Amino acid sequence: MAGSGPPATNTFLATGRGPRLLSGGGGRRAAAVSTASTVVVLAALVAGFLLAPGSAEVRHTFFSPHDMWASFVGNPSKGYYSVGEALWLNIRMFLVAEVFILIFALMLALIRQSASPVLFPFRVLALIYVDFFRGVPVLLVVLAIGFGMPALRLPFVSAQSTAVYGTVALIITYSAYVSEVYRAGLNSVHRSQAAAARSLGLSQFATLRFVILPQAVRNIIPPLLNDFISLQKDTALVGVLGAIEANEAAQIYSSTVFNYSSYTVAALLFLLLTIPLARFTDGLIERDRRRRLAGAAT
Amino acid sequence: MSTGQPGEAGAGAIAIGVEGLRKSFGDVPVLNGIDLTVASHEVVCLIGASGSGKSTLLRCLNLLEPISEGKISMWGQDITAPGVDENLVRRSIGIVFQSYNLFPHMTVLRNITLAPVRAAGVPKAQAEEEARALLDRFGLASRENEYPDRLSGGQQQRVAIVRALAMKPQVMMLDEVTSALDPELVAEVLDVIRELAAGGMTMLIATHEMGFARDIANRVCFLEEGLIIEDAPPAELFTAPRDERTQRFLRRIIAAGRM
Image 1: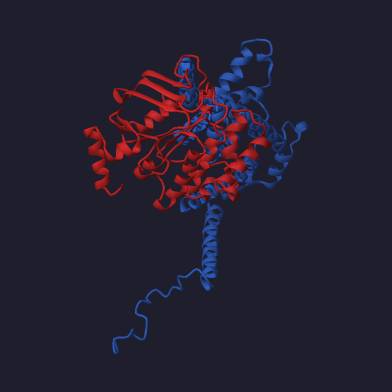
Image 2 (image 1 turned 90 degrees about the vertical axis):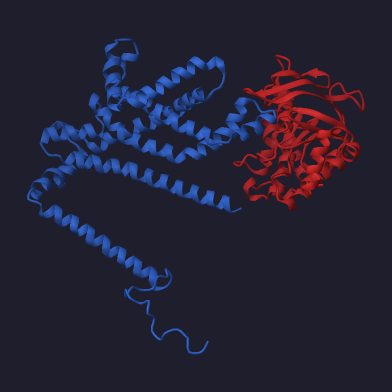
């Protein structure tokens, strides 16, 4: 053994990098590196924007603080509405649509999953419905309902506001998407769970209600929330019917004052709505992943 | 444990009667004409290779699988007749599966009380009290608030047995309930079944545990290719099997060191 000890200096030291261990100084060093990297990238992006030949015009048209504030608070006497206030309509449409979508989509999914021969025609109808509304652009459905329903001149049905028609169109379209999410969830629960429940004498309904659905819904919360993030954004499409939601209010401002900063305001407001939901969704996915890992370890 | 069985005329009354039961999955025949009777308080073990039809027979008796032909009766009542409420039938037959099939999103206590409360209409407080008594009896008293994935396989299977017992079934069917367990956990589950047998529970048990079948059964049925080949008391079937196919099966079991 003597004479064959390690060399006095570490011949593997070639890069001059710090310790790889995350403990001690390693963590602080990593934080410093990532901060520096972020600052450099951001500075390059800002410099690129500021040094572009048309930078001054773009800053004036899209980021004018005066116009951003003016469009945010609105001034009906000058012919434009508050983008901030209009956002409240988006929020209301989203909240109402969400409730109906959750119910209607579940019904669609259950019909498609049913096995009874009596329900065969309903299964076919549900299949056609889902294929149709997943395939047609949301905007076209909004236009068809928004202009078609009033044109029918029926009592009640034709006497609703544009926001109601828009919300109905969103419910119709998104129910098709969400029913597929539900179906994936129902399929993710193993058949033996239903067998165990039925063998105890639970009815088919009780089995669904207490055993299958709770497990299915738990499995689909992340994709469900994903669909709701895009539903929040798609409430902006209802503006084409003339409903004063945030996007429409921004457009009215821009065509009145000839400045696009109102769109920037609308974009920022939508981000304020969707980012919390997106973070929440990621949090749930992470929690679910950890729970699964913990479950697999035992 | 043996009170209140409909139509019971003392020990020896026929609890389960199966006549000419056939079952196919598509074109594949699985049961080819099963005739079987199980008397009240009798313990009958079903043995045979995997795929011989033991599990399918139990699932048919519990009406989990529609049958192709034949008749099944419980205490003289035809349960395969049209118009029979399958939920009522299932409430009087407890079945426990190889893979436990506990509800993973519910605590042990809720797993057990769900069916009594939601299917039998027992008040929640009473169902919980009865569930706790059963858990206590089978050494699971401290587990009522655990979720199934925190329990060992043996504990999960005992909870599954308790869950079936909570419906106060008149017959228990056990479908290879120890096959998914680590060897050291088998005994605790078999002890539970022995206790049930001692209490007079009518049982139909599909099993690979030959020693256990020999101990506990009043009768052992050997199945092959969807038929009951031999039906005899364990002392007779294990020591002097008459049919050549039974002999061949038992030789293989012994050669594999499982008896």
